Image 1 (tube, rainbow over the protein chains, first blue to last red):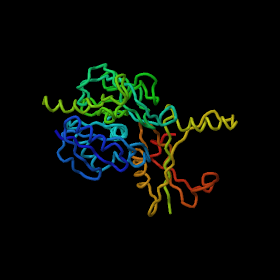
Image 2: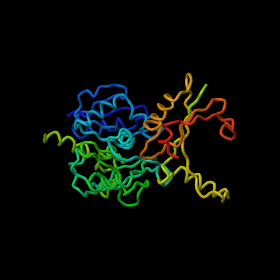
Image 3: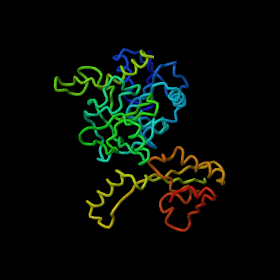
Image 4: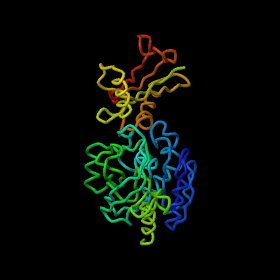
Length: 231
Length: 110
């Protein structure tokens, strides 16, 4: 299985995402923001970073990149798309996911290992989790406050489309403690925390067992693999 | 050169963390007359050629589609101004030649 990772001007975690794809057992394919070519990949990751310096709005300019028209077409065909952090912001700007992200309510950039609850374990990117499972992956952003109008929030909650929720103190003022959401079909998922940084022992969050041994993020990538194995 | 000005503000019902930070600074400076600060954006689009209603309508569309995100922001104003009237003091007197948006003004949120 081939998973594309799009690099935009200002992407930071594209290489980490490629590495996570490899660790999960798939082949990473580097995709370029200025192309109209998805190289026939089976799934797509929009990585974290600060595309275009977060100028205008986080993810806004990148979401109008040439390749995003192809990403939007693919998403509408059912191709799995995962947006991480800046990638999540792009997905909301591209209207593939509802709501938006604003500056953290705490007024500072937040960087820490973050506990989450997997609320929806039936998306393309969360099938390897149990619903209600608690995981810990890094969170690092300045504009991670998830907001949506009351009707949208009600619909998301009612349809089980809140994919991840923050546990413990809300790190950024996100409404309903929402850390990530999915589209109706379950193939497009976006979240602010970074699963790709918790995929290899020695480089992940601390766990009770050992320092930096947390690999809770790996299941995002193995989940999408098993989606295709089952198909 | 004629210029079209677009002003965008965070939605009133949303927390504006930047405005809150500035309001906190004002309070610490003893400026107690100000109960709140909200912080938005002003775009100045320099136009090559004259500004007409069609161009203003196009910018109105751009303001809605690209310059703002309606989930988190409102477009407050789209209007034409001469470049001479921009910069310090541009909005302080009667000399600013602002052209109302005409028919499309109904959709501009105040």
